[in-house]
Image (tube, rainbow over all chains, first blue to last red; front, side, top):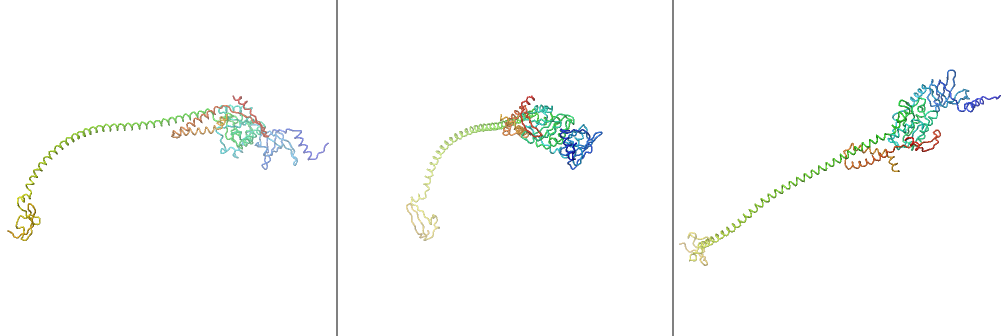
Length: 414
Length: 86
C-alpha cells in the first residue's frame, strides 16, 4: 500500500479529479445559498439540494453571472481540495441559471447594476449614419433572424456591403463569440459604419447571452454605433438597453438601419416637382415683368408718337396760318412799297416846288437887296442901329454897303 | 464602373445637397439666375441619387474568424447570398 504525504495526497486527488475522473470538468445543479463576495475579488457560495451541500469558489472577473441566494443554477467547474485548509470545493468556471425565476432575478439584478453605472444613459446614444454603406452584422447565419433581416433590408435599400460574423446566439459559446465579433469589428473599422446584433425570439434562457454582462459591455464599449434587435416585440434584453438604437425585432432592425428607397424616391420626386414649379413660377414672373416693361415702353412710345403727331399737325396748321399771314404781309408790304414810292415821289415834287417858292420868297426878303439899291445898314457892336438914340457922339459905328463897309465915328446926333 | 462606385459612396452627400436645394426653393424668393444653377444641379443630383437607388442588391461578405482566438480569414460568399436573397 502506498503511503502518501499530506501534500502528495492532496495533489494526487486534485490531479485525479482533473485528469482522470472529470477530464471535462463537472456540472452540478443545485440552489445557491450563503452567497458572499470577499475583497471584491473572491466569490464563495454553497450549492445545495434536499440532502447535501457542496462549497463553491470563483473569482469576480470570471463569474459574471449575477447570483443571489435561492437561485437555481448549473455550476461548471473543477472539484478541488484547497491544500491550505483541506476544504473541498468546486472552482467555478461559469454558471448557468436554471428556470425562469433565476433568470428573471439575474436579469433584474444586472439591469439595475448596469443602469446605475450609466450603460443605458440616453446621453451616450450615438446616431447611426443616415445612409450606411457598410454594415457589420452579428447574427447566426442559420437563424430566421438573419434571413428576415436581409430580406427586409433588401426590400428597403441596396448597394450596401454587409460583413457577416456568424456567431452562436445561444449556448455556452454565444457570449464569447458575440463579444469576439464586437472586438473584431472594432479592430477593423473599415468594415462597418454601423453594427447590427440580432437574433430571433426565445425564452429567457435562450436569450441569456443577450442578457449577459459581457455582451452588454461589448455593445457599450463599441466605437462603432450599434443597433440591437432581439426577439419578438415584447422581449427585452440588456443588450437592447445598451444599444444606440433598440429595435424590437430583426426586421425592425433593418427598418431602423436604412430608410425605405421608395420613401426616398418619393421625397426626391416630390421635391423636384416643387423645384420645377418654383422655377416655372420664377420664369413666368420674369416673363410677366418683361411683358409689363415692354408694354410700358410701347405705351410710352405710342403716347410720344401720338403727342409728336399732334404736335406735327398743330405745327403744320400753325405753319399754314403763318404762311398765309406771311403771304398777306408780303402782299401788303408790296402794296406799301408801291404806295411808299408813289407817296415819296409826290412828296418830293411838292417839296421841290415849295422849295422853289420859298427860295424865291427868301430872295425877296434878303436884307442885302436894299443895299443894292443904295441903302446902308448901320450896326454898333453887331446890333442894328435903328434909333439915333442908340448911339452917342464919338462912338464908332459900322456901315455896311452893297459892296464893302465903313467904320465911322459919330460926329453929331441929328 | 469606377464612377458608379464613386457616386455610391457619395449618396449621403448628394442627397444632403439635394435636400438643401429643395429647401432653398421652398424658402427663398427664387432668383432666376441662381435658381437656374441650383435647378440644374438639383436635376443632376436627383438623377445621381435615383440611379444609386436602383441598386437593389446588398453584398454579403462572410467573415470567417474564430472570435475567441481572433483567427481571421476573409471569404467572399456574396454571390451565394445574393442568390439566396433573390
